[in-house]
Image (cartoon, rainbow, N blue to C red; front, side, top):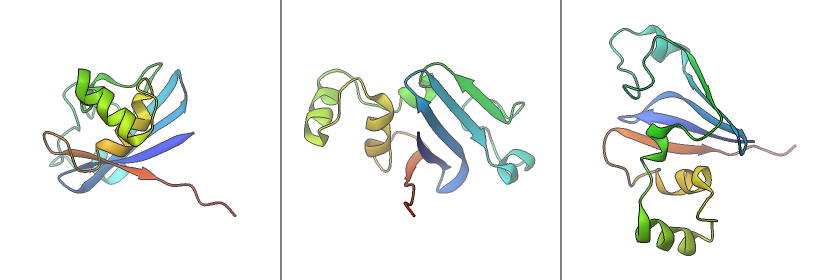
Length: 111
């Protein structure tokens, strides 16, 4: 399982989780979800639902990634499989995105 915080303008709006290659979940944080002043992260994921599930990376998040040659170069430089979209998202979307949304990895602590 891999997880990330989804931030909009630096404020935590929700959590994105990959359970396996075919199981993804996006959950709005309770405070963000309940606040009518806070916009949805994406028009494709309105705040009418608190939890979204999918068998592939949600298109909104996939579209935060580079395309073509740029993605190949980033994957090679970061030593990440080019088809590991979630892994690329965790590394690339921390700062280098177009728009208000950024992604911050949640690192599990081992005890």
